[in-house]
Each structure stands twice: as structure tokens, then as C-alpha cells.
Image (cartoon, rainbow, N blue to C red; front, side, top):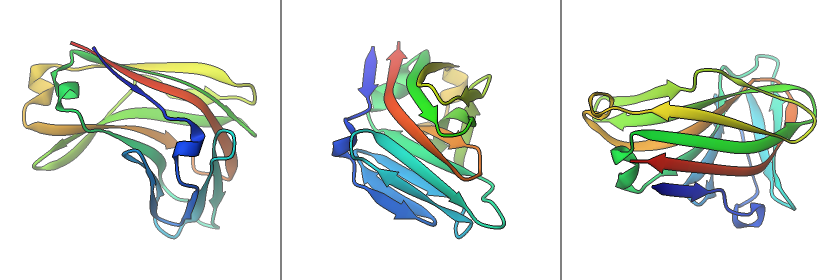
Length: 162
């Protein structure tokens, strides 16, 4: 079994970007370039502030690289996180599988509807040797709806089961 626990908010670098910003610990925030901005505040918790432009971005995300090659030997990967938002928001979790041909986002079955009260959400990703054929790395991505909002991430854990 492998585990990744989101570090405390203070371990990340506060950032603001109109494209992509590395925030530390194999993590980044990003959105379609020049279509708004994402700001990360790390005072007491991990807070993402989304500002969309007149033409909102088609995508915005938090990406976490899972650099240990052991993740690719897992039969399933389980995500559990706790989040809240100033206004209701939708989050889609995906496991990004990298190969020599590029990448493929393996989305969770259902999106998560984040409310104003901190709530736990989870997603399971089943992996097979056929799916992982030619894959050399994987990341976890949380894709956010693309409008102005504030989202607080209180906790996040990824577990891999062999």
C-alpha cells in the first residue's frame, strides 16, 4: 500500500497565476492561459481563489505528481479529501496517466458538488495492466468549475492498493 498525504498549508508557496504556478511538493495550480487567474493563499489552510475573465477558462486545476513508480503497480487508487467553497462548486477528480504519446485523464465516475460546509469526498480509480501498458508516470488532478469562487481544501489523502 502507498499513501500520499497533502502537506500542511504552510508547506506550499503562496502564488497567483494566469497560467501555471508550481507551489511545491510536486504540486501545481493552473488554468487555461490568460483567461482569469488562480491565487493560492496558505495562511491556515489551502485556499484557492478563482477569478475568471470575460471569457472564462475551459479548465483550471490542482495537479499533484505521484513520483513513486510504485503507484503504477497498484490495482486501485483511492482519493479522499475534505473541501468547502464560498459558493457551490463542482470538482472532477482525475488520474493523469503519462506515456510516450502524451497523457490521458482517467476521470472518476462522478463529479463532486462542493458546498459551503466542509465535507468529505472520495473517488476510486481501478487500474489494470492493460490500462497501464506504456504508462511511465501518474498524477492526481482536481479540475474545478470555471467561474469566480473561493475553494478551501482542508485535507487530501491518496492511497494505492496493490
